[in-house]
Length: 92
Image (cartoon, rainbow, N blue to C red; front, top):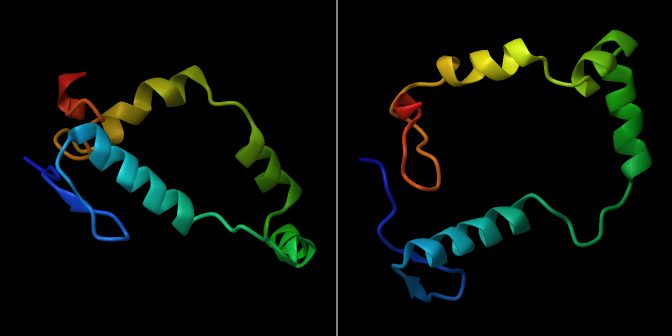
């Protein structure tokens, strides 16, 4: 079974409780993928605008269809990426 039994945070504290492990992971990835001082967003937006056409933008921002929501779990490997409660996709 894929699981994390213990983890150290960025200052070296060891955590073994499932809830604490989750908090350490959330903190790590939140820090990794956010910026405290984003800059040049207009430059980034201008690059993206040139890469995605109007049809693509509409497709990326539209609501999910009922069919997509129903099909998604069946496209996932049945024993990978268990939910936070440990239940794998095959359960559903």
